[in-house]
Amino acid sequence: MSAPPPPYDRKPSNTTPSALGARYLSQTRLRSNSHGPLQEISAELTEAEVNSIAPPAPIYKIVLTGGPCGGKTTSMARLSPYLRERGFEVITCPEAFSLLVNNGMAFDYLGAVEGMDIVVQDTVMDMQIGMEDGFERVLRARGKPAVLLCDRGLMDGSAYMKEEDWNKLMQKREINCVSELREGRYNAVFHLVTAAEGAEAYYTLENNAVRTETPELARSLDSMTLNAWVGHPSLKIFDNSCDFETKMQRVVEETARLVGLPTHLQRVTTKFLLKKEPDLSAFPKEVAYQIFEVEKVYLYEENEVVSQENVLKEYSFIRKRTSLRKSGKESGSVYGWTSVQTMKDGQRVEKKRIITKREYLSLFNNRDKTRHIVRQKRISFLWNIQSFNIHVFKEPSDVCILHAQVRSSPDSNDTVDMPPFLDVDRLITDSVEDEMYGAYQISLIK
Image (cartoon, rainbow, N blue to C red; front, side, top):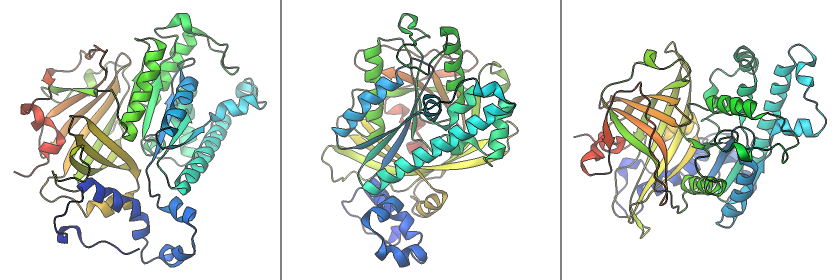
C-alpha cells in the first residue's frame, strides 16, 4: 500500500477534509509498517486478517452500566435491532461477574478466604478483556461498521472493592493509568441510574437471579459505579426524571448521535462561561473529580465544498488526553480522532475513534498549520447526577468554559442544576457572537 503525497503538496480538490482524515486513519497501521514485516507478508494475509489489522470501517465500543434495575438489559435489547436495521454489525458482550455466578460461583466465595475479592475481580477483568477483545477482533475482521455493546466495563470492578484493594489490583496488573481501562478502551459510557433512585415503585429483584440488593444498597452501588467512570469524556447519565420508555428512547438517540445516525436529540451539552478557573480546594469533599491535560490538533482547514449534498462543512482533529494525579504528575495518555460534520439543517454530527500513539504521531504531521495547537486543562466531575467538564484553555487563549450534560429533545425542558462552588459568568449561546468560545474558532491563527 503506497503512502500518499505529503499533505501540503496536495492540490485543492472536492474531497472533504474529514474524508481524507478518515482514509488516512483507516490505513495508517499498514502505512506505519510500510518498511517492516507486515508489509512483506501482507500479500499472504486473507481479507479478514488485513481487516483485523487495519479495519476499513469504524467500530464503536459502548459500555452500559449503572446500579441494579436501571434498564441495561432492555437497552441492549433495543439497541441491537435498531443498529442492525441501519447497517451496523452488533455483538453484545455479557457481564463477566454474572457468568461466574450463573455457572456456580457463590457470593460467599468473596469472603471465604483472605484476599479472595482481589482474586475474583482479577479473574473478572481477565474474562472481560478476553471477551471484549475477541468480539472486537471478529467485528474488525468483518470489515463493516460495527458496535460492541458491553454489559458493564472494566472500571465497574472498582465500585465493588476498597480503594486500597483496587490499587493493589492495578499494581499487580501493571496498570499505571486507569485511562487505559476507561477512555482508552471505550468510545462511550452510558450510566443508567437504578430505579431505586427516582423510580422506587419499579425497583424489582425478579428479573435478574444475580441481583440481591436492597433499594438502599442499590442507590449506594449506583453512586459508586457512576464515580468509577468520572473522567470519561463521553460519560452519559440517564436518570429517572422521565418514564421508562422515554429513558430507553434517550439511550437510542444518544447511540444514534454517537455513531452518526440522524437523531431528534438537539443537543447534549450546555456551555457556560466561567469568570475564572475554579479553585479545586473549594470543591465539596464528596465530589469526585479527575484532571487532564488535553492537546487538540486540527488536521485540515475548513472546506465548504463537500461531496455530500446535505453537508455544509467538515473538519477533523486528533486529541491527546493525559491524566494527572492530584500531585500534578502525569500518569498516562490516551488518543482519539474526531470527524465533525455540520449539516445544512443545522445538526452537528461527530464520529470518533480511539487511536494509538503511533497513529496520533502520524496524523500530527498532517496538522493544519493555519491553526494553533489547542492546549487545555480539563476537570471532570459529577454533581447531583449530572456530568460536568471544565475546559481551562492554556494556549492560545485563556478562557474557562463549563460543559454541562443536559437532555434536550422536542418535548424536554430540562435545566442545569448548577454547582454552587463555581463562579459562572453567563450562558454561552448558539449565536454568531459566541462562536468565538469554541475551540475551532480559538485555534485560528489571526
